[in-house]
Length: 114
Image (cartoon, rainbow, N blue to C red; front, side, top):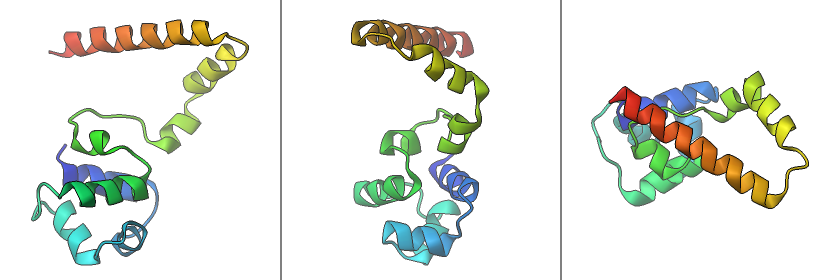
């Protein structure tokens, strides 16, 4: 998925128009349209930061080929809710171990995809 498609997908998931995204990101509607339609394939770092902020994602996510959960997906996913419930009461050290394990599983999953 290219950056324009990713921005369009995020915008549509949030239920906002190109005009609204332009207002939130302090860009023009024409700029948003050009980015989404691939007429401006790689926006400047400043533009990326504005879009990422307006869409509540990181610039790394916008630039990556990797698919990630949107905020809405995370809030609706019962497995993620269960994971957070299960983590209640863990020590800081325990949470570090959980995060390390998640990173390990994610790296193994990436290796399988290649």
